[in-house]
Length: 72
Image 1 (cartoon, rainbow, N blue to C red):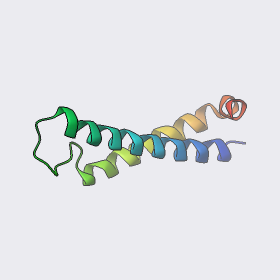
Image 2: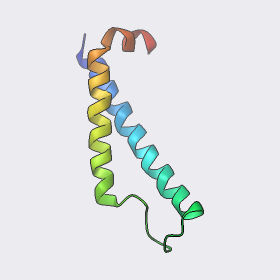
Image 3: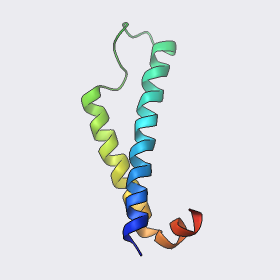
Image 4: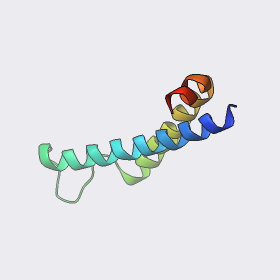
């Protein structure tokens, strides 16, 4: 009962963190004064964001498994 929502939460949190990193890096080239070719979020730091996004998503999926199942 708790494994499937946890895995869905991990996957959703991972993807959401990737989308946030892509959005921030894309907008930094438009609005920032950074040099061309530099990212606002370092690729090594993006792994940290992806890990914590998956961790937070899995925690939410585990703690609110019944609500998560009803939502899906």
